[in-house]
Each structure stands twice: as C-alpha cells, then as structure tokens.
Length: 495
Image (cartoon, rainbow, N blue to C red; front, side, top):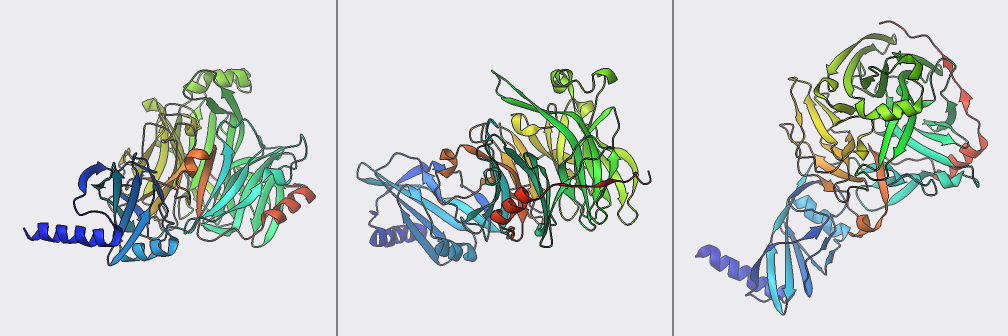
C-alpha cells in the first residue's frame, strides 16, 4: 500500500512538471536506436543520444541519477553535455520513455545506463568506403570520446593529384600516447610516416633482404622498436556471396625496425609459413603473432597470386609466441600458443590487456582478414590460468574483428558489423573482474541517426590518452615535399 501511494505521488509530481496525466498506462520496452538499453558506459563518455523508433504522437524521456533529473522532449533524445555530466557524476542512470498515442500517455519500461571507470579520451580510426571501391574519400580521423568533436589527422585527398592517388592505413601509437605515432602511405608519394617527439620522417622500410615495405605494426612498449609484418595483400571480389570481399596475402613475413639505428632485421621468414599480425606483451618480452602453413602449395606456385587466391579458403592461421630480450635484441624459438588450424579455424589479431592477464583474438573459418567474414567472433584467453572461451557477450551474428584495449585495461573497443552486415562501427564494452564483458554499445553521436546515414566504415579503432598534436596540413606538406629515406638491413640475432 505504501509503495502504491509513493507511485501515485510520483505520477502526480510528474504530471505537474511535464503535463503527463496521472493515469498513463504501462507499456513495453521502448524501441530505440542505437540500442543503449541496459549498458555500461564510462563516466567520461559523451551523451548516449538515441532515437525512439516507436510510432507515437509525442515523446518525453526522463533520465534520473541520484538527485538529478533531465527531461528531453521529442523522438530524438539529445542530452545536453553539461546535464549529462551531472547525471554520470551521480552514478547509474535510470531512463524512462513516455509516449503519447491517440491522446493517451504510455509509460515504457525503464532501462538502466550503468556508469563505470573512465575511458581514454580519444579514439582514432580510418574512415573508408565499405566496399573499398574508391580512394576519393579516405582519411584517418580522431574523435574526442568525451564530446562529439572530430578532426582529420590526415586525408589522402590532401596530397593526391589527378590520377595519382594514395591509400593510407595502419595508424599506430606507442603506449596510448601520440608523441610516437606512425601510419603508411601507399602508392603516390608513398612511405611510412613516423612522428616522434615533434619530428617527422618518411621511411622506405623495404630492403633488398625483405619481401616488401612494412605493413601491420606493433610498437615495443619499453624500447625503440616496432615489429611489423611484410605482406603483399591481395583482394578477391565476389559477385554473389554474403562475404563480398576476400582479403589474403600472397606472401608474409615478420621484421623488427630499430628506430635508434634505422635498421630492420628478420623476426620470422619461414618459406612455408605466412606470418602476420605481430603484437607485443605489455613487458615487451614476448611477441605474439599468427601464421598459416602453406601445406601442399608447392614452391613453384608460392608467388602465383591466382593459385594463392584459389587456396585462400584452406589457409588456417594459428597463434604463436616468441621470447625476446629487448636489451640485446635476441630472440628465442617460436612456440605454438594455440593451434587453431588443427581445429579447422583461423585465429588473427592478438591483443594483450595492459596488465598482461587477457589475450583477445578473432576466430573465423579461414584466412587472415576477419572483417569480411560474418562468422568472425572474438575469443579470449586467460594468460594467468591458461583457459580460453568465446567472448559470447561481445559477439553477434555478423563480423566482430579489430579490437584494442584502453590504457587502464578496463575497456575494449571492437569493430563490428552487427547493424547491417556491411559497415564497420566501433563498439565499447567494460571488462568485469571475472573476465567477462558488459553489453557492447555503439560510439555515441550528436545526431543519433548518424550511423544509419553515414555510408562509410570506421576501420582500425585505436585509443589514445591525448590528441594528435601535429596538424593535418603540416603532415600533408611534409608528405608532398619529402622523399622516403632508406633503412639498412641487420642480420637476426639469437634463437
């Protein structure tokens, strides 16, 4: 009886403040986009604006946390940042949507937005056409996660000229800071752009002793090294298949670039293996990577792209680890960490949490590029007790692919095509103490319909704790005026 009196009093108060009648009926769950129902968000994230998709005449949304209440009218729920900050500072937020239909108000089921640890303030990603059919608009952008501000780090259009075009990719940062960053420019004015402590370099990381220029990077956490793969990456386009594109390697090795003496050396270059995706442990003493055995593919056909392409579906990548002494630059022998190929699977993109406890990877049916496979899911290893499991709470019926950890290890960002199967969007999830994750939520936008209208993908999301400070204009000027400098080759040490 006491609860009923309190409920009626609260409705009376609501009616006095908002004009909603006391006798509003009870509804079901509100249909909103993006799905921000019962999620966990960082305390410093931008407002989770959403669109109410139910058919109604009027809408009112009430957000409550502690002694704070925010009311937003309309089907587009855009929450002022200052008011949102006051809500998140109070703790978890209860969200209630009211809808007026045919003159009567309906109170939809409330849902929660739980508030947890801070997240790194910035996220960088490549903005690219979902079908990779054009370089006309290709850029590396950086978003301030605490608000909706976005800036271009570098765009291919800034240095392209007529038919001379660029592909830009593989932006990477050392230890979540931007004073050490790199990205690649392919084709026109190509080279690896290195920004270190306020100085720019353009490097040609191809030598006579290596297969190609550098591709996928991993900065060493304590020393001036970057582990790279050497790949010749190819594409096949399907005319009728749910997976429209197959990306595969014609060859692939691993190299180490020493920034101090401007040299590269071989990490792994087994002629019967395709090594790829190097990733350091947080202490820099172990390098994880993946590799596929060529199997029955004969030496005479190894560099035949047609044969490689036709065999792509048979390539299964397994996970390896290799010990490293960063002071002497000597390597131990490679060891199998997870034999995915033996389980008729392919594992890619290993990323270790900052505390060294968790290893998150992609697992798919074949190949080295999971974004284009609907069956690609995330798998997590507990490096403390040796167990592994599918991270089902992160996975969907569509592709989950590239992922990375925040600097405090409390959050992951994953690349997912769960909305439409075509466009890759960043999703965030909080790591619980037991190694499980909370429900992933999409990168918030000022206009909640933005992700449905924006026909480009967000590729390779990377956290940083600070903004990129070198301007896009300065980068473009440097790219246009500077030739790529060569590097020397050094023999591999140890093993």
